[in-house]
Length: 396
Ligand code: PLP
Image 1 (cartoon, rainbow, N blue to C red):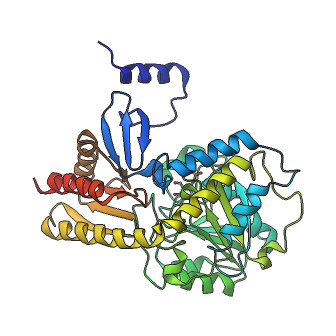
Image 2: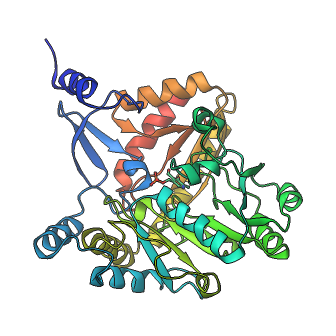
Image 3: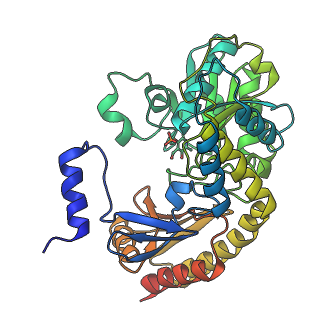
């Protein structure tokens, strides 16, 4: 007898592009950090819709603000002022470092990075970019040119303009690549898709100085690390680095498609009207939702919570690594962006699937790294249940 899930798979086969790899799961609803599939099976979601639903699935306040805005005004055109956009930009300016008062809104992280690359070109007049190996910056053509993973780029090499790639965390390699024809270096404060790689503590400040020494800009891609994910509003606060352009996405909308880029006034001095736009840039519904997400994070003190709970989780997983050194290579991360690297890719894939069977959703990235990036308000009891399953699988 065919199940509801079988029907979903058959439908997808018939009506959707075969362009994405799926897990054998079709979710029907969510609440907080729990989700239920079409058969009614419950999961604890430590993926948070890929690091997006930072205040949990279907937060009641976010849901009602979205409904209210949907009844008020959802969309205009870039030619008309958007009041929710201004509210959001004003609130965002409280989070970004001094000098980053102005933002621009788009619909996806890749698009925010495209905007950042354009800004860097506008400011410097230069066309070469430096990016890091194993980075992830999105799948549009410009962003893909900076994406340091061959598996994503190989089939499109004929139509992308590749950046110069240097190893992540290697300041000397970046210095050697930075010449006076470089518009910008783009880098993640912690590589997320690349396996939750945390660079040496002086790396980002070093890049800032090295970029500026040759008149290049530093673009910090905080799409995954921003919006309280690492226990700070922005991950740049850990190192004190001051980039020239910051890109944000994912958690900003808490589930609605919105991303942003922000830059210093010095960089924005090169922008003229008509340089950028987009049908959904400043969309009232997504801006209003994002403004509410930031408000909830502030009110529920989720920055501090991500820091505190994240440190506990990391300590527990580091202890696990010590207890099972033959299986676990290392646990690392910051706040609630945590990676558990196993020695063997096959075991990691098996564990990823077994956790799902046991009702825990995590991500497997960089072949051997189980990545946990739950909602910042994930209940401790649910986190404990999920980690207990992970420990059992490793230790059994
Ligand atoms: N930059 C980073 C660091 C990311 O992790 C991602 C997505 O995972 C992106 C950019 C691309 O964002 P989007 O998928 O919204 O285009």
